[in-house]
Amino acid sequence: MADHAEFIAKYPNVDFPRLEKAVEEILAAVGEDPQREGLLETPKRVARMYAELFSGLHLDPARHLQKVFEEQYDELVLVRDISFNSMCEHHLLPFIGVAHVGYLPKGKVVGLSKLARIVEEVSRKPQVQERMSHTLADLIASELDAKGVVVVLEAEHSCMTIRGVRKPGALTITSSVRGLFKTNQATRAEVMSLINHRK
Image (cartoon, rainbow, N blue to C red; front, side):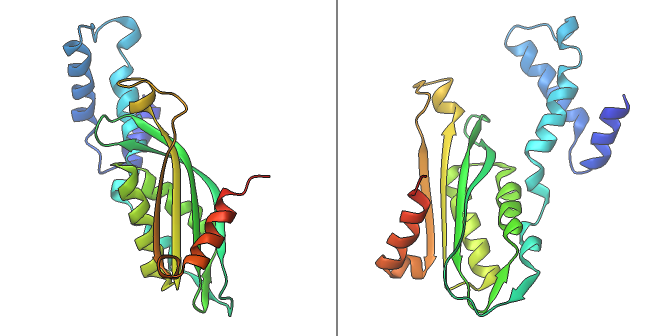
């Protein structure tokens, strides 16, 4: 299976045989037959899926913020509605939503696509949404030496929609602010109004 071999080469930190065996065990434990025709390739498929969804465990998103541009711009830079999907570490079910990422530069700016890239890489691991918010805010604050950073995440959690309380449509919103966004209420109110603005 060349397709599978390519995946193994792409994710050298992942123990594919161990993952596949674990998936077989789960299927057997819930009363399924892992040897049933429709499930024969499922362990390999799930192993590839986990390798992809957890790829952020082996990446350093800070590298995307290394190339900066000197720019005497000291007002808000905001990228809104960056889509992401991550995995709740409590149930290993996805939470899917959008990130709004903003900062107040201090003499240097970063390419806008880099903000989307760090959201993508930070999201690719088991975690809670609260920690993801903090991780992104701390990363931008430290790497860009920004005067202020704001990160707002809005997501729907599968662990709330397809199991347990079963409330589809319920959104979880978390925010992490640093610098001026934390200390200056007017600055914070301005960025929040831009994030919440809908056409």
